[in-house]
Image (cartoon, rainbow, N blue to C red):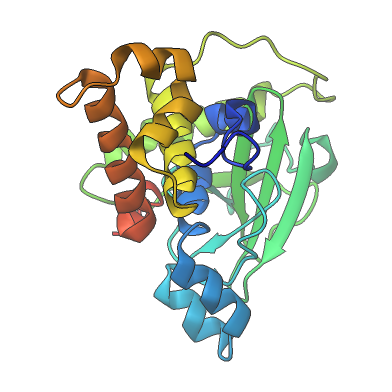
Length: 251
């Protein structure tokens, strides 16, 4: 059996950042692993046409994980707040102050819109800035109408509450609860996907995810561990091959 312990996908610690990603960041993690997307990035003769095939306005380097990449998706996610100048502001309206937004900020213009992504411990906030919005202007936030508007409004309100409650200086660290089962599933799915793309067998994938001792004790032909690993691999491949669009709300 090939020794996989030195391969990049083997240490689970390398995937801990996945526990704190939102849906848009997870969508990028699955897309950037697609071999066809990686080839499209290298060949990109017509960048805009190539990007639209994958649901993007601009191609992004697949070597960058979600902590450093800022993909410009073709449709705004419900959790991306849109900020516009307030046409009828009250006397005590709060002005937009770019430099009071905490965290590590990244501005990206995709040819149609200016988006701001900012991250600080415990939060990742994305904003779309209207062309006429200037620093100090009173502003409003907007959401598009849709059939599930109530759920989308709640998500948008939660994002705006983060901005309203944000401290002037971002904290250096934040205490976090134990990872949720959903977050752990995404971590295991991405690790299993990387292992599969590297040519690992199901048993080798299981050893990387759960340890050789667990596999030695529980790896049976009709066992639950084998079925669990098989489901993780199938899920990862499905998300990479197009399922990421659901995470990014691309329709």
